Image 1 (tube, helix red, strand yellow):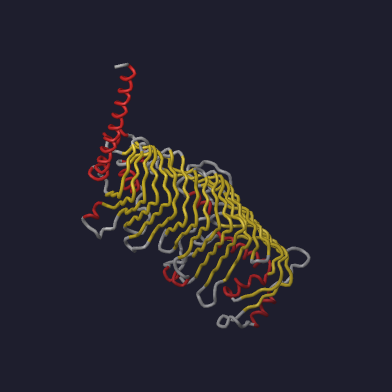
Image 2 (cartoon, rainbow, N blue to C red):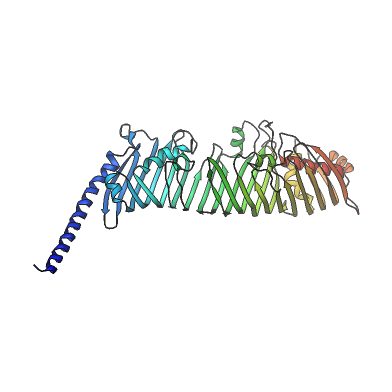
Length: 520
């Protein structure tokens, strides 16, 4: 036999041997997979699949129609507690044949999860009772079955349902997730985030979250990639109408309604260092915020101390840093109501633009620059208002400086607030009002300047607010200085802070004190 025939026979023999080996291994791995998934599955979850295909040439596994549920459901069909999932398909790429054959684990380069529908039933109404539950109930168990470097998830959805109320606490739809460069070790499993990753991309629509019994949060779309985050169509809304909300309050409390078109966070860095959460960002920009703050005086007063913003930031127990915060082309409405008989007094701030710099928590800081806030808006839809406000987070006295100017203000525009709230209406014009106050946690001092003309007041009857109290009106106008004359009127202000009232109450009382001194 010639040497060429021997070589040909040898090559053909090797070829057929490889084919037979491939078929044998393929068959053996198909038999081994159910053993890994079922018999050697030491997790609390059972996994079933409709069909599975294995290719040794591409080292890939493709499974269709997977079902995941707690194993104890087999003994108790009514038990809902835990994770229930249906996945249209899973593809595992470039798996390690040795680990699959001899270590009973599917270790691979990547996993592609298509259309997972996950429902988590849990006790209580908190989204997470303990952050360690994620690693003990999800990461650790499935790491024993499948370990990959990259995860790609398409068209996913997650619901978290409270067994207490049988209502959703959290819901997110149309999830697209990419996690690349994943590292899970014994060390990472001890950390708050039980895995490390080099790159992530998350896109999702229709996020719903119920943080407590009184509010719900919705986001139309979230896009985040490493150091950037964008939210669209955000809303934070009360669960109840005002009357029912107020009825449920034990103490006086603001009711918030917040909507915004979009918000962007740039150059973001977050995570944990030695169990301690941190968050840093270069900027946060919110567009077209529509905010309403409503307070009703029916509930009893909350007499707890209200801290100023220095203290609130100083007391945050983790490193927080946002270099610049901007709120653009927005609107703020404040409403206050004594009861439900006459309607609320309303203050409005339209075309509102705000820029705040050097937002910091006081955590572990020895020195920091002042927080500086600039605001410009249209007050009561008629007059430009500009405010400059600064304070230092580390100042234990909670000192602040705030100054502002309002120009060409038709005081009749105050009627939506003064008429229902204090049975009073004004006419006249403030050509210019300036205030300049320095304060701290105990008192405020400063001065104000007012140029005005043709100021008149009209008082209404308490029992019949639609009717003028003519005698009281006449007396009030006798006491009122109706014109500042050729020179501006000025006043010095000194005021003690009411500890159970907010910073804004402190500011409004200081302004009111200046008006009292100038006008009466």
